[in-house]
Length: 298
Length: 270
Image (cartoon, helix red, strand yellow):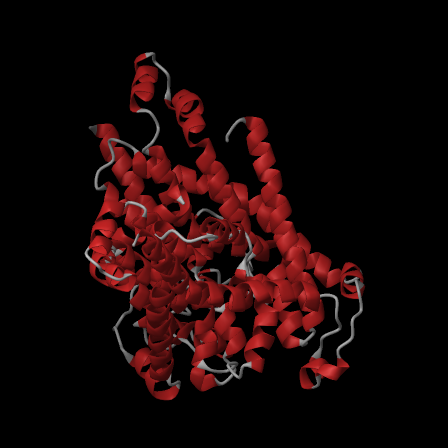
């Protein structure tokens, strides 16, 4: 009785997990591994037509990428998003969370939903909206800046301002997500500790520095890891807003991979880009974990 | 008291700035063609008109793209639930050899972004004849590791005695899942369905790759293509943006508690 029941349970376990595991294997694990293999081949439009044209070329794709200035520009742009964008997004999200979490604030659920709303909008649709908001002559942003005496800026047409303009959009679109995570973490800050600090006359900054910050440090780490991954995966933003321009100023690594793969049909070289992207995410995440461990956050 | 009012005022101001792009999008979509391209930029239509929406549906076949999006997102949601829910339950509650090892492997896979395998996946689906079909657009949603986590997390709190009692009564594992487990899963099912529906509706890169024929385009792919041809038509493009994003925005507002609870279960606890 007991034995057959265990057998039944085990069989049911595999039956229930089987379809999902098969799908994960077939549509996620195999493609990811194949990406590594493909990156050692010269898979291109000729191989697409006839597999006999496929050749194993070792590390040649990687060597060619290292010699390609556009690839380095894409890497530099993406690293710019990581280095400037991640701290900015974490700071903005945390500030928003502190504001919405304030005890004396009224209608807190309303503000929480309002600030979160941009995150659930369709990225392509809001990117189109921001294109017009950033318009040099008729855009609301230049209009508002004009009110305080700033001359019109050609946001998306100038290589120096195109990246910051896209980062502004990305921040608007995603800070609500991080804010909600921070809000949950702020609930776990020990109340009595904060009250004690208040009684001792600690001001807002001191309470934040010595009570709140240590309590939410692991969450800051989590949010920055998630944000790093997000910054490495920017694609639709430059695709819709600038098409990678002006002069490649907003080409991201993923955008470069898309062009290699599906515009030029260099699938071997595109796979090498994908693999480099994966390594970058992995390395940056490991560095973050190490820094956090040294700082005692986890 | 006064502090509270000042804070509330600041929050209202921040919320207004954050929502401004969405308010402006809706306002401009009701303007007559050419009305938005003025200085200073008008905030509200002088005489609200539906002409942009009519142009979109009559001349640019947006109805078709809307139907495509509804179809792909609904199918993605149903299929994801069918694949993910039994798996999440089994990983939480059924004892079978290799379970923990397989689950650990799934945890490790979470750090691998889906885009890594996109080029080989395209070739794989091409070989299977699924490129340029709705099925091709649906495939990534079957492999939802995050959903398995979400369901597993929730199932861990189901008392094992309840399942044992049903087993003693002779109920099969399938019956237990359907009759006993599923009813208790309702909140997490709504959350998961909402996540997949919104995710597949908003998805851009994969449908852009896998759907080549224009009549298969989902709304985001169609909107991106339209916006490249109609750079000057602010009002038309804002109407297109409204049609694309308003359905999911309304869905989120209606079910926001489920969405936010799921988000927290997936990121903080998970």
